[in-house]
Image (cartoon, rainbow over all chains, first blue to last red; front, side, top):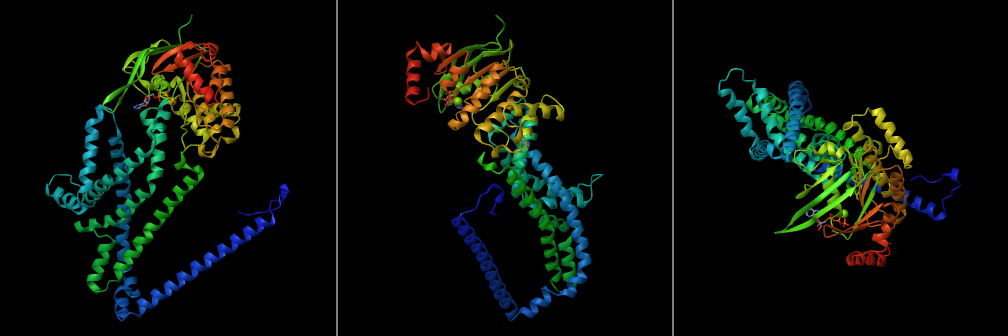
Amino acid sequence: MTVAAPATGYEPSALQRDRVAYRRRQTVRSVLVAAASTLVLGVLLLVAVTGAPGWERVRSSFFDPGVAWRALPDVLRGLWLNVQLLVFCATGALAVGLVAAILRTLRPAIFFPLRALATSYTYVFRGAPLIIVLYLFTFGVPGLRLTGTPPVLVLGGAALVIVYGAYLAEVFRAGIESVHPSQRAAARSLGLTYRQTMRHVVLPQAARRVAPPILNDLVALQKDVGLISLAGPIDAIRAAQIQTAQTYNYTPYVLAGVLFVLLALPLIAVTDWVTLRAARRQSAEHAA
Amino acid sequence: MSEPVLSVRAVRKVFRAGRGTNVVLDDLSLDVTEHEVVVLVGASGSGKSTLLRCVNLLETIDDGAIYLEGRHITDPRVKPDPVRQRIGIVFQSFNLFPHLTVLDNVTLAPRRVHRLTSGQARSRALALLDRVGLADKAAEYPDRLSGGQQQRVAIVRALVNAPRLMLLDEVTSALDPELVGEVLALIRDVKEQGMTMLIATHEMAFARQVADRVCFLDRGRILEEGTPEQVLGAPREPRTRQFLQRIVEAGKL
Ligand SMILES: Nc1ncnc2c1ncn2[C@@H]1O[C@H](COP(=O)(O)OP(=O)(O)OP(=O)(O)O)[C@@H](O)[C@H]1O
Ligand SMILES: [Mg+2]
């Protein structure tokens, strides 16, 4: 955008200088307009909410700093469980989803049973409500009284992995199929095997395209890992609920909610940054 | 005479079209000997691309046989990957990998398929890129190159594996006229090096320059073949004459 490169002897014409100055004025103007309208809206909202007749009651039962401070240690301890669960479940679900997606795209006849298995897996577990699968795993499986049954936490994690793996599998598959067949033809005709073609040509392009929807599912997963507390373990929401039951104050819920948002932010920011950077470097992937 | 590098024997290829069938290659036979450049010409839809894709085993044939250096490659027991490793193919639409740099596009097969070390693959790739005048673009991504540059990269990507046979499918038809020249010059250069090639093209002037033999394809058969002077200069078959007439009218000769 900057003008003036005296090294080449180029001098922008009066017309171009005018144009640049005009654009700069326009930019400043639109920034000012945006700031002003945001300010006005913010003030209006603040006045409307704090001026409402019930605001005092709402503030003391939802936004009480003292209650929040006292609830913080327990909620944080719960949140740590959420984080651990999220890391394991996300890794597991991504792996399961990727494998299921690849199995669904295998064409040779010998893989028919695997393909059928992967297909029915995605059909069943995208349809099944998460809570029911969770109950089946955490209450049903231990009920069998088999020796060596893993703890409830692991079973609940497995339920989440299986349900979310089915969602992710479909997203991955859409990504794999969105890579144009000519890319596979080019790779195969260089002598790359099916696996090498997948690994070096198809999956890298697919992964970049599906990163945003995958991230959506991971953020949803972050919220759903808390459902494990239905089976006993105490996560952040459950910890907030316990606090609330003791004090009849809802502030711990709000606290947990804010912490959840804070947890998601870096994940979202990093993914946006990675995909944006890749797109910018290649400059026109969609044009290919 | 020595054994041909490529030998196509009575090949038939059929595509199902709706309820009927579309015979695209019909009892087609063709030999390409060492260091020979054979150019396929013919109307759109006459089966040129299909023939090249069959040779590279991207399509399965419905009858006949194809031999590469005397080995039957269309036997269903033959593994396609080792066959493809000995053939280089360049497509009309380049098909470079958009997520890899030019250098990585070129070195992918040498590293993964031919098991060269990164250093070896790199120096071979850079030497070839230099020869086609693209050494300074090695770190760029394909979508940032002009069409002619992309096509030259695609040719280098095939050449770097030192194939026994090169298949070129209308490598200039997606290019602006100014860019055609640089690609054709490169192919002439490759011919000088003694590469055996089978080329499909609509550029009759180019066919005249590089072809040792021109084959006129019509409805899946070779209707007429011979030196460029014979086929393009004094065609015997009425259909060949008709085809050339139309090209002259379109100003492409
Ligand atoms: N995958 C396919 N499925 C069905 N029909 C096909 C397929 N590929 C090609 N065909 C048909 O085969 C015939 C020959 O196509 P081909 O691409 O070989 O022609 P071509 O000589 O290369 O033409 P052009 O000069 O336009 O590239 C056409 O009628 C086309 O419709
Ligand atoms: Mg074609």
